[in-house]
Length: 159
Image 1 (cartoon, rainbow, N blue to C red):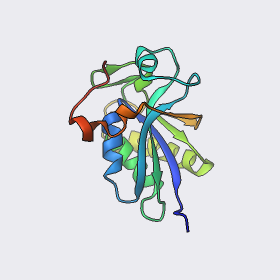
Image 2: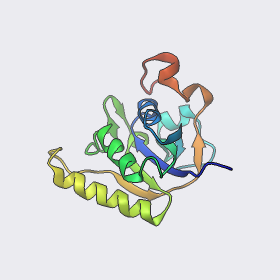
Image 3: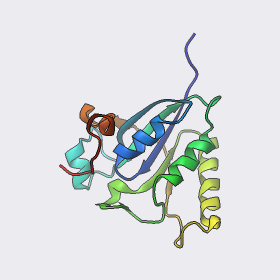
Image 4: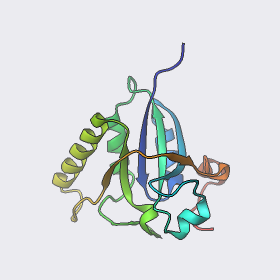
């Protein structure tokens, strides 16, 4: 019998730390660093240089009976600053935008609700700029990016 799972895709800046955080959650079956939102067959150098339209994202495979999509959204908003347009820490460019790529109408509604709640929370002094978009083809990042922090401990999105 195969395990039931759903997909969620989030862009919260450089994917290394985002992937590591999602992997720690009970109910997350896998988290894969990659690219979504732009030209076909991207690679890391092209995405980091800008102009491909892609965001660095993490695609999360999860068991919704163990962890809810709403919990994943809460973690997403906890792991980055959703009020900085096209920037997370030292990483600048639209490839580092705050984005939720939804895989169903229910995910879209949940994402929009979470953004409204985040705006009302008073946690940030600026409005949330997270974009909500329909999921597009997912392109896994090169193997050396997968579990990057586990392999190397530290890193930033630079070559």
